[in-house]
Length: 240
Image (cartoon, rainbow, N blue to C red; front, side, top):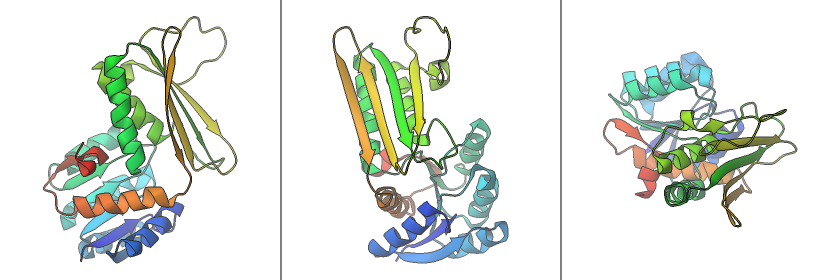
């Protein structure tokens, strides 16, 4: 039986992953929320699931590398330097990083990529989350933006527009716009709009329960436990 260790176990997602682990019939290796706990957890776990904070990623990856334990990173708000850390760790262990562990969002990203490749329409991405979320745009919005940019054959950094205020002028052709809304207890709503002349396509995903992400994370972790060193995505889990 594969044993899953949870980094950030006292957070909302950490607790949800613990319940999902039990529901999947997998073993729970335990949890860690302090720096001195992550190394012992990595040693006794077959795979780690990290839903903590960007500041803890370096320690968590080091623990995983020392123990040779695969790690799934679902922490959002990561920057370029964090991705460099993930790339380095993936030379030694299996690493899956994603902005969203929902199986539905994973499929949505594939549809967004295909639509962006076929249609030269304007692309706008809107997301809404609860009032306590600290990063914007959401990791999922950026994941969808990456999918759209990939469909266009360009890096998202060259196309992304995160804010519009004042007299910004007409929309720049080919850009991907982002809008972030915060309020209430919304778990996560995402919409990708393809706007053409006289017609529009909207691809939406509405998360109604946090357990959706937890069950997806557990499915991905169980898959990751058997993979060789390398960097993976949720698309790999679904074989897309």
